[in-house]
Image (cartoon, rainbow, N blue to C red; front, side, top):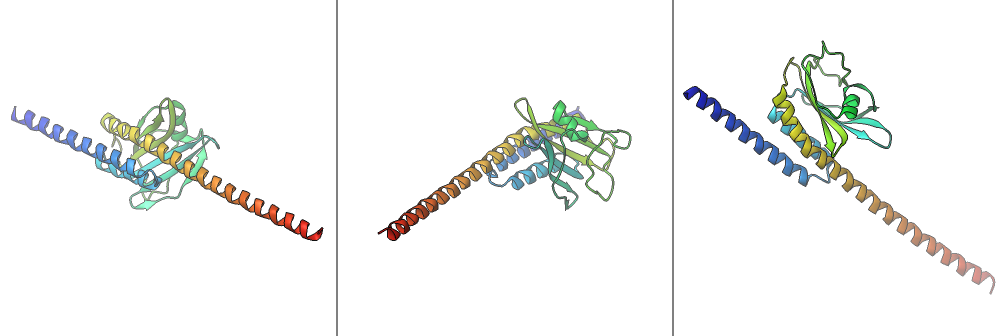
Length: 212
């Protein structure tokens, strides 16, 4: 009985720690709307606290170009540059279509194509979950490990909870930056229109001076 109680207590402590992590990252995402990079870092940090994570990837779908962009990819302390791949390619493309989470126990045995970032040692297993807004899949986040069978249903469920926060935060950041760009464009157009008016007035003065 004592061992069982100790096990249950440990599970309760772990559950409380996880709720605290998820709550903290949700708050971080609210305050990082102006900086998408901070949002990506918060998602990655929370994932590392929740599970083993040697490599981490965030991919987003671009509806305009119909491509998937790896906006955040980090392995160890190495941050890799953004890269864009065709919409239907590899695991990311498949998940964008299916909207379903995936666990791969051993990438050497599984034939699914995954994006390689140039890791010093090969990733052997992964868990990947979709970023969803309603019924639409907007991206994918994936935790990866050098070990086989590093992820199970528990890690998948935790990453799915994290993804629910992440999808909203990333979309809010996108909308914010679109609004900023629209405001900047309107400001530029206003300045241009004022200059055109000035030029028009100057031309009128020149015309009047010439003909009087």
